[in-house]
Length: 87
Image (cartoon, rainbow, N blue to C red; front, side, top):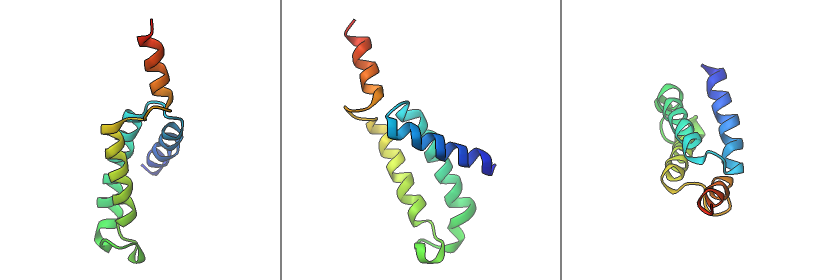
């Protein structure tokens, strides 16, 4: 499970930086953060000083926003969409 979570975070992060497959990779990362919050950090409370889920919750909020918003105008997804609609 750690290999799957690490791979999702590594490759999903690279895809988000590139702006490629933004919404699917954000969905995978959001699921990973939900699992991390409840499996690891929830019992320690909210705040980071006690190994809490504050940081994972902020990453979850970011990935959920990217699911709805998408990659933006400078993403590779947008370039692909523009090239397909220009034809």
